[in-house]
Image: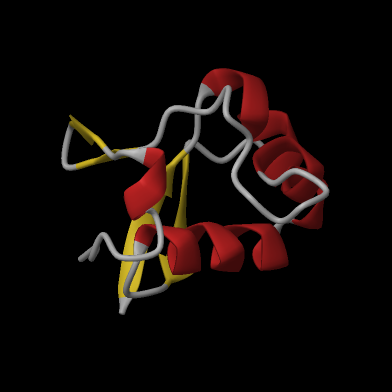
Length: 77
C-alpha cells in the first residue's frame, strides 16, 4: 500500500527537495525502508548503523507520535 511520507525541511535536500514521498509499506518501518530505497542519501540520516531508526527522529502517523518500540507493528495507510 502506498503511503505519503512527509519530510522535515532539513531532510528534503536528500530527497530531491520533495516535501513528501509516496512509499509502499504496511507498517511505519516498511514505509521508512521504502523511503531510503527511493532516496539512498536519506539512509544514514534515518537509520543508524545497527539498522534502527535514529533516536533523534520523531515519527508521526496521522498526527500522533509513534513510540519507537512500535515502528515495526504500527500499521499505516
